[in-house]
Image (cartoon, rainbow over all chains, first blue to last red; front, side, top):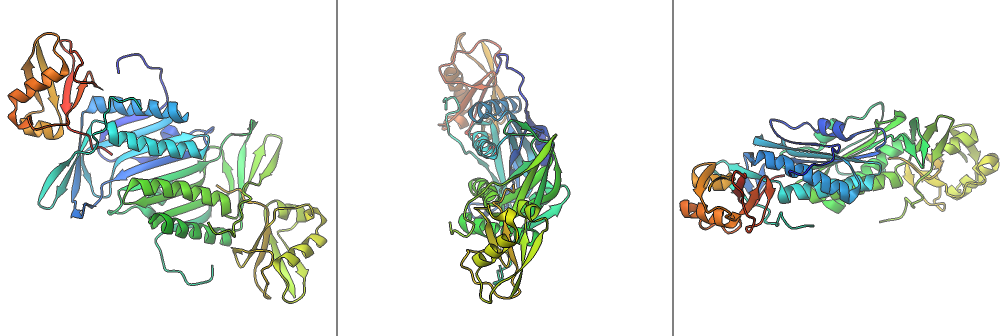
Length: 153
Length: 153
Length: 80
Length: 80
């Protein structure tokens, strides 16, 4: 995280309050890019048969932003798609609202779509962010990925 | 096209003028869906090493809308993702603006992403729509897909 | 019977019109109708990959056409 | 040396605080620091899959920590 990195295009942010898909799309678009793929993860009203009334996300904020940027770098190297935005919300996320937004632009559609699919997998696997589900009668931390984040893929 | 179809959710439209990604996202979103994947195809300023100054799209409009709806049906049956929007612009499309927008919502991300990728492939393969590229010094019809549209996949 | 055939994109440009009317025998197929169109429009004779549609659905050349059905012929598509 | 260890999500709740200070030998590893944290916080002793970070990057238990480096320990992640 501390070594100097070349400045690369991209928008990586952990934020309070609603995410704006258009902001992510604007951040990656440009006249030489024919394809923009996006992924929006939203708070769902059920999980494992149980009703969910809201979600709450916590992050290790400075590290999470650095990891989002590293994921962008990984994606850029793997798919040759330098134009990437990854935004993740923290705090309370009401049902139906976005918790994460990813946009990837590329000259051609295949790379954009594959890069976008890969990016959300990596965010779920390694970004230091945690979700707490709130039910009518309680709440529970979700602990998802036990992927080894230090493993080289 | 003529047999009665069950009414299914979805937004399928050929339109003049700018496309609105948010409209597509709103059309497919809902509290039981945790994932929305989108694809936006934009007019690119180059093709095969040649500068492109604008695109022009023509459609066999009523058939194209029917075909977009059929693609939605195909996707719904194949991926179990009933919430789909496909919008395609016709007329002049300036460089950088969207010619096609697709959104697919699903409970889970994998189906949404795969369905979205499949939908744009099918639009390009079978929707009766044609692109004309305009250059500084002329123009050319692009004739892409010779996939047999009557073949069952 | 008289058939109006819709032509799109480059085919319309080659014909100089977005539609053309042709006379064919009752019970003619789409393939016969397309052959008649090409007799009328020499510029279309070289076209090897036309797509055929009847009533706004893709159809094969052996599709028998009924009077009044909407017929269209067009080049390979390039939307997206 | 004194180390401040950041704890996140359920670990912070179990500890009753978002950070805890522990005393370790100079040249201690992340693994030793985590062991010391668990001595201080019995509620964390059963945790089998902690993720360790040093200076805002994931790191392995054998990573040697220098004074003043930012250390964090947290449960498997669940963003997205």
